[in-house]
Amino acid sequence: MINTDVVIIGAGPTGLFCAHQLGIIGLKCEIVDNLDKIGGQCIELYPDKPIYDIPAIPECTGQELTENLIEQIKPFNVNFHLGERVQEVKNKDNKWILKTSANKEFISPNIVIAGGVGSFEPRKFSSKSCEIFEGKSVLYSIKDKAIFKNKTVAIFGGGDSALDWAIELSKNAKVILVHRRDEFRGAQASVEQIKQLEKEKKLEIYTQYQLSNVKGQKVLEGFEIKQENGESKSFKADYVLGFFGLIMQLGPILNWGLNIDKKTIAVNTENFETNQKGIFAIGDICSYPGKLKLILSGFHEGALAARGCFKYARPNEKYRFEFTTTSKNVKDRLGVKK
Image (cartoon, rainbow, N blue to C red; front, side, top):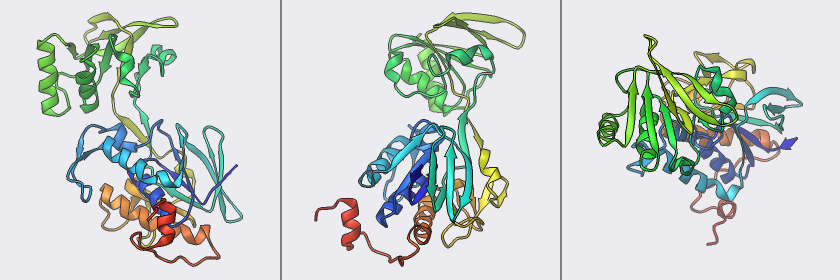
């Protein structure tokens, strides 16, 4: 059983900044996320795309924003529990007990739900033949692009992620790009670039095809694609990558007694607490009059939710606001020597 002041569900920008604000006021937190990496939508959907609405930062990518937020919370030694979903939540003696899909248990007076619009799960290939290779040679995200060097890689999808990775991996690998439609959905500049790479014979493109099966026993050997008219083609390949976007699901949150409407959770605007005492919701998953789905708004919500957690984590102490520029306590927590 892990005992902590706050459990944050969601390791996206909003959850990360909330962890920072909790550390600033002297509270410990643990972060749980269904994805296998830190960063939420920023990492999963647009790691290399520019973001223009972060205050004082004219432009940054999702990857850069995530890295900076991780650096910002380093002084607080936050623990991450990635690739885990919170399955069960129950209240006992004014404490919340949470159990994850990895059978970890947490006890805390506070829960902050910062899970975007729910937990993210990749859309997968429909072919059952892919299942035995999942996580090995059939992949839905990329952790280390170096493994594809001098390999044959099939990429399925027509959006930004598929195009971006086709362009990137074509530098060091043989790339076969397959899309079920004629037209790609990615940025026009990326579409033009892959067509140019095709002309230069640096990658192959097949449209109006879908994966029918993959071949191999213990090791992936190749794959087959088919058109609606039944025409098929077979290829050898070392890896098959699918980029079909994410399925966003509320999952077990639906059973926690929260006031949910249209996949969002109603909160107050004082501290973003839900109808359940000690459960807060911030980011895209929360709703209130005038809500804007901006990262900036999520940062504001996380700061106020952190202060809302204080009264449950420290019931015998009165919260006193301290400026980071002048407070010795805050500077000590941040490890500032001056």
